Length: 372
Image (tube, rainbow, N blue to C red; front, side, top):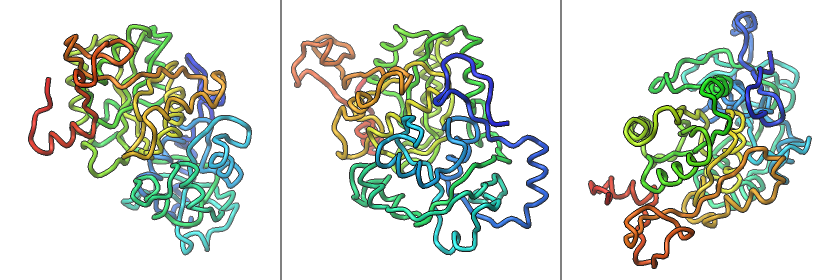
């Protein structure tokens, strides 16, 4: 089965993709396990496989062929014209790619060597790493975590449709492993017509809480969707972040207006392009709106403060299909004694306390408690 029944807002491309093998398909593939050539996936490729299979990356059915790859890198669109900003590829070393034949089935193993998926290899191709880095990440600096991954991965991309055979409940957060078909169903059961998605890889601080609650004044529900795939080594560990979210939702939000679920995809740190990518993923999960704040999906000083908001203007609203809610940098205003932005506060720079996720992490590392 490759599509799923759709509740609410249409997924990107119109149909929710399902590449999870049926029990019969799974048995068929498992019978061939020892005869199929193997490719071992790293953490990011594994999460990409899962996201394709559960429909999080709809309309993709597999890893991108060269035409789609080039079109995405160059023009931020698939060859059919649909907006898509991040290449989804399976890159391998030459010695892995060489013996593989186009038209054959490939066994996909996770990092522990378990047979978790199958690739129908329709194409293998060489790609230009510097070209991808400059276009997708706007830099070829090896210090950039996304660029670093591109330069360290293999020079050959394997492309074709995939099937997911094996997926365990999440080791740490099984009850929050909610796939797009299920989140859509839950939104419908709750009677939510409008849902705002919030992407995060940091614990929620007061500025996040402020913009989430501003958004909640406008829509029916908040979909708090923290990313638990591969992140930078200095990001706050996922288990710590999830505990923070649980406490926030338990004590500071109305229980019936927020749904917490994990996003299994990996961070790219691609700034503006990743903001579009994150919005499209949440559209697939059933969100109608998406919060885009300061330096969304950015890292260091590679992107302008609001570049991730401006990029939405490069597409027609109906092409993206999910409404971006663009927020200014929120701060604590000492004059009014509350959270605010420049849109709502008359304060001077000296009367504003800004705390970024990076600053909060640095303070916690030093054993300092951030100000209330």
